[in-house]
Image 1 (tube, rainbow, N blue to C red):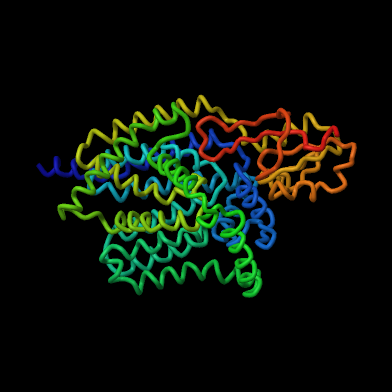
Image 2 (image 1 turned 90 degrees about the horizontal axis):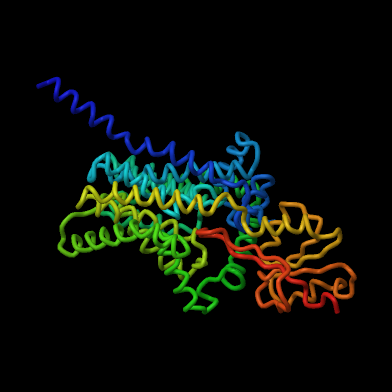
Length: 473
């Protein structure tokens, strides 16, 4: 009898590590799918920041992402390049985030279902795609989920101090995620432990703020932040100030769909349908329990869900709703809903995990290891343009600050500035092109080259190249 109990106890202890067995497969798959190039101009800024940190020259832009850049610099020394170093930061971060979310659910749904939850999340478009992209959000998600896991486990005020420290570091990765930190006050224990939580946040912030002040000075940091904030909310940030409410609602629906598991395109929606349906079922169960007063989530899950709800309001007011990566803080809410469905019906999570892994494999094979549109534009110019060719671009111009080209590429923020920036080139014999990413720019004739989005990709924006309006006159 004692031997049987001992074997059962040993199996239980071993089973607790089942979710960890999923992580190496995820890391291998994500690494094989990675391409060492940035996906948009923010990714370019991160690479430049690793190579030479200069916040005033947007390497990267304010607030400087100091914790993320520090991790990128360390990883780059091991990987051999800034690009691969930052890719590896994303790969490891997403694995940690998935394991933390599964760890919080394990006590309720059991180790096998927790392993299935980890696999399901890792196969979802949001987690898998961003696991090998050069953005700061994956590292922010890892720190956020670790903070929630810390307060979900054990007891005592020390866990709130540790969680606060992780949250403070998170703000050095994604300062715009401040609403998620407020969510940690939602559980009753959070309000009771406000002092250690706040002390931890302060300590975590000081770890990166003091070096930033030493580097830039108080005045330099303030002026850079004021300048950036003014532009972000008034000129190019696509926040609520732009007034395009209909477009913002559409962007939110698209971003929320990605969190639910749906990738772009009919096949992307079909492949992600199992996760979306299971998540909706789990959300219904949670709402039903809350309405009847039965069952409370753990403090970690409660903090993530409360923070997510606060973040949604901030998303509309202060973020660009068209960027899928801005929805990553909401992924833990999907995990909590999926865990609720798995707690009610234990067969759901393994079945959905198998379906999502199969869907992720098929969409990945269909998409291949294609390059971002702006990188393909750079390759086309290198192969097809004569020396002295001039190109005018919007957001894509930042890529040419990192990657050399035989063409001369100029940044044009708005269409009404095109001829002013072109200046002497208007009467030049040199060939002039323009990209269609310049807001309000006049486009005449057929495109010279087209660089579509990669299939199922959540980040890509297609690019087209045209002759400049004055070319051939």
